[in-house]
Length: 119
Image (cartoon, rainbow, N blue to C red; front, side, top):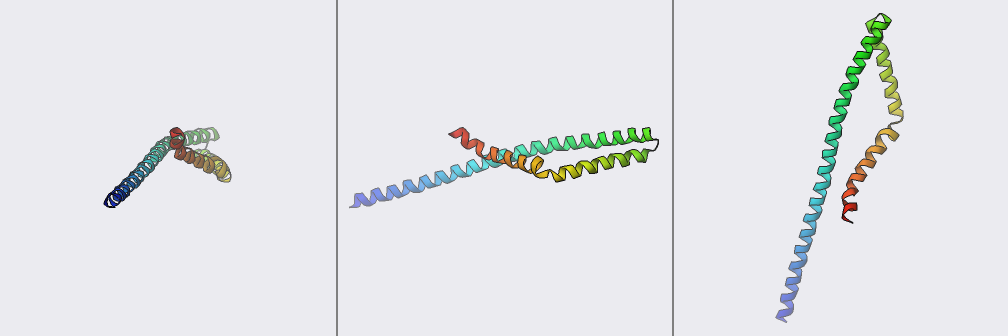
């Protein structure tokens, strides 16, 4: 009878160790996915910031060029500001298709990429 209790205690210890190892593996997998998403997001934000700087400087150059062409600098800036307004309205109206869905798809792809590699 004592042998059965010893085996039951040993089994309970093994189950506890197994559960702890599975929890640690799940934590590591979640940390890996989170760090991959954060690294991807950081890279995209840096690229977006550089692209934003390009857009700003190109807009200033275009405004100055148009202003010189019109003979009034302020007119060039007004034309460029209305171009930005039109672009903003277009992006706002298409935000689900050109921003929301690609971001969601990228996140889902990255979340499930590790699981596909394991299979």
